[in-house]
Image (cartoon, rainbow, N blue to C red; front, side, top):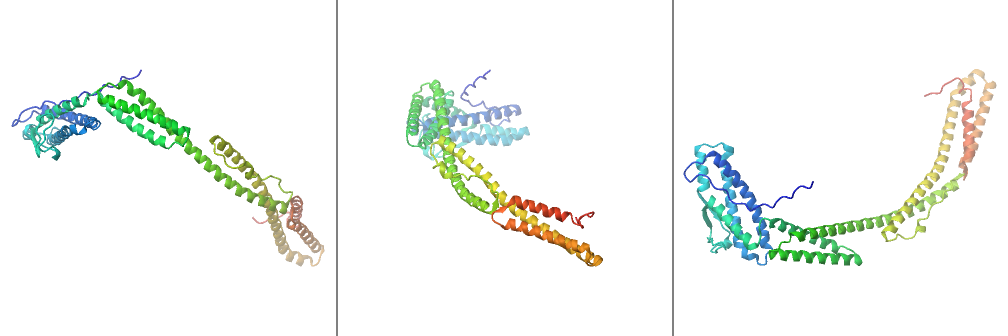
Length: 421
């Protein structure tokens, strides 16, 4: 169930002051008065702010200046005296002396400093302005503030229920100014003309409502629809501006990605040419040409499609680069393995030559070792020739390396012996 709307706050009136001058206040009465005076102070300040706003929006703001300034001065004097009362009250820790001091602060003289512009003037309420101060008691200052506020409400045609109208009108004006800024940022053309017409319509309706309020008309039923239309207009303009910024970012990203892929494609074609010249069989991946996509379009939908095609080109280039680079790396890996096998064969020969030679002294084992070295040297030479030849036959090189590895692992030092870790 929708909760009921809060009723507008009624105009506040000052509480009755307890006791009299020279007699200590009753503690309970003092507590109630301080609470009520604090509430009056806060609500009266909010009411004065609303009245000041209404006066500024009136056709003749200067006519209300004296009463507004005097009301503010009275409120400030009462608020300062309330602070002194609270300090004396000290959360209820008061004796007879403190309660008598409270009575003096309530009923004693309250010097209300006036704005210099009020010097020698008389307010519309008949209160003569002095050059410096208005000497009244705290209850008198509160009653005078009540009277001034009531007079201002009548003259400005503002009752407590109109406070919400004033606030909503102020919000509407601020919203129209935001719409004005958003409309100015619309690109030239039909969109800008639509936004300009919308702004003029909203601005005119807000001005009409403001003039109705000045004449005292009830505009409560007109505010809601206008607030809804203004909110929708501002939302649509914000969304449109956001989409334009996003479209501009997409177009800039498409241009940057196109430039990047052009440079990457040129480098990839060089890599592919090196790979085809260096190894066989070489991968056969086509390198996409970004120029075939044409220039970056300007329409948002076309830019989105163009970005999708650029991403497809980028993925194709990634696959081609991996294939060509992998083939070249394979050749380098085979070359490194061949050199490692040769180093192992050299270590085996160096480790077994002295022992075998001393034990057999030209025996058949020595001749077998020499033949083995010659076979390994021939396998190395053939594998080296294949890998150094351009383009290198990777299948033949792998077969020769497999033979070299197998021959190396089947020697006499390999049988029945584990190598070093």
